[in-house]
Length: 362
Image (cartoon, rainbow, N blue to C red; front, side, top):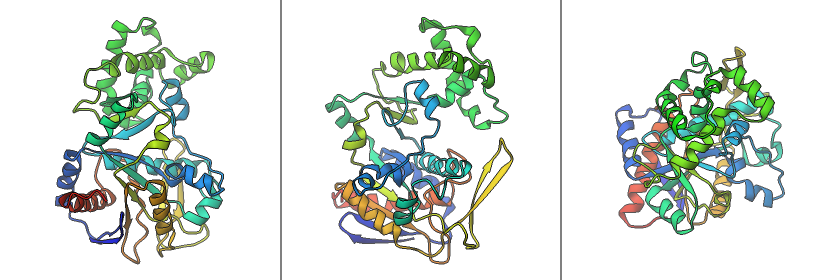
């Protein structure tokens, strides 16, 4: 791995061709102990305001917007930060899902075409330090709470979605059971007969009434249990939900990690592809990966510096002849390790130690 300081507040990390698998857990543990929180998305959201000021019209991709809205936790009114050992992995996972959603809708090359032509299809991650962020939220009387599991996924468990088709939901069963038990005691409108009906029956209720008893119960749960905890963020929490749309304007991460432009022109054959699989439709979509750097990463990083003047911006690159560094987790394993996770964890650890060692946040 090669790390270069390009200017004040701007670093470039070039990954090695082979990563040290033995160091991945140690690097992730270091970031976790340092209290690093992550928020990942495509630059069309992270730089939305800057792109708009430059005259671009931006159409955002909102994953599961209707489900989030139904439990009162939709973007941009709510911002979700990941914490815990696999926080970088979770953000990269959602970065990939944003691209996958556009691929499934067949708009990967047409949505936000002008800005992507100029700045690329680039994924990024904002990094916050928990002991810095939470006191600032408290001082500004901003609402937030921590949760050990993503509540939208717990909702799917409690509506009875098929876990054989969605095996990831198995990780949410224990906490979902706790939510149902709490609601059965504390939620005044609890109707046990409307829980775990299955996805289609729950969807029918949703179409008929605009909500389900499960969704109303989860909304009541976070408002009256999670928000009411004396310790707003507990050690076991893996997500922090910030209930304030103004976070979009005032947020200033400690670090911003910027990947490379991901895709080559649609008609090119570069010998490398990003593959999207739709398991429900048995559909496979393939898009050519960029191999030769096109300068859009640096252009994006400089715009990040303008948007976040107090942040350190770190560009992650692959060696020449390798496909671009995507800042995504395309194995679709939400909490796990991959080459990209290893590179980010190692590079961020080295730069954080370097800057903290001289007591210089830039």
